[in-house]
Length: 186
Image (cartoon, rainbow, N blue to C red; front, side, top):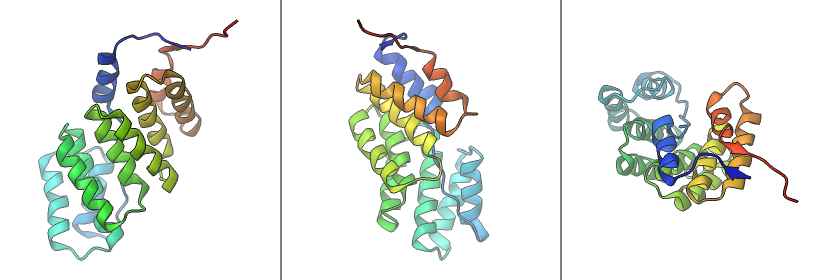
């Protein structure tokens, strides 16, 4: 297996331009926390959407899971704007409330990949996958990015394949696979 597209900079560009996939957390029951959840799921990253999440955290009586989910959703908005340290802080807060919520670690992994901390990102992604998540294809896609950052092309290839298998209609992992060439060794 050989990488067709050379260069570490290309991996970083993929991680930041196409973006590591983010896994939001559904919060229901009305109120600001649900509005925050909907904004995160819709791809929101505006400061006003983040402010809704902050207001929910500051004023609403939330269960530990919903509080964690709201921190995750706010962290995703920060992640989308490239604010890695702030996003990581929100994911750390989420883990204090619901340490077994896999989406926390998938998103921490995405933020760490964005910060070029691939080994740390890989550890969080593995933890998130192990805990179980609603959208595992995103975790495998992110893990493939981490493997590429660590120059483990074979593992990256298999994780892109797994992402396609889990979400056949998602184009991002299919695009990544076009960069690979598989050949038999004699």
